[in-house]
Amino acid sequence: MGSALPGERLIMIGSRLYRKNGFTFVEVLFSIGILLFVIVALLSILVNSSFTKDSISLQSIAVNACQAKIEEISNSVRNMIVATYNNQQFAVAGLIPHVGNGRIQPGLVTVRTIAVGTTNLYDITVNVSWEQIYQSSVNAANRVKVMSYTLSTTLVQK
Image (cartoon, rainbow, N blue to C red):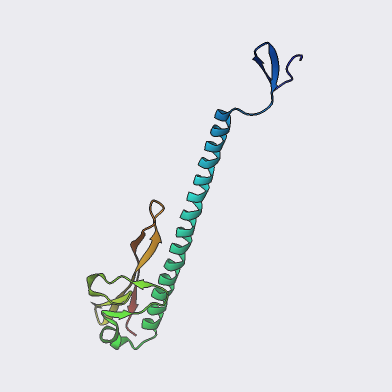
């Protein structure tokens, strides 16, 4: 039959010489194993990027809600800020409220008055807490992660 070409194997069965042109079973299994490893790694990256995208989207909603509440407070009558806004809870569309600590709405405003001479300063803190539900990559059960965003500022009484 002649000599083997490059990359080709010759097998002797009995007194005859045969050319072998395919892959062995072990080579095929090894190739499938490498392919599966790459697919699992890519799926893991896809799942994590999806969770990150959702997390960033919800955090953006919380940041916008805090900024809007601070803007609303800064445009209100200064001597009514504490009476109107201190310990005020408020709804935030698009967020599932975290009901811990007796809260029923995701947003909470805290206002403290700081007297400096004859001027009052208002220390305003706006906090938004929500529950983010995501599916675990280990099992099919949903998991809940409590997220929070806080924005603080100080206003001067005019």
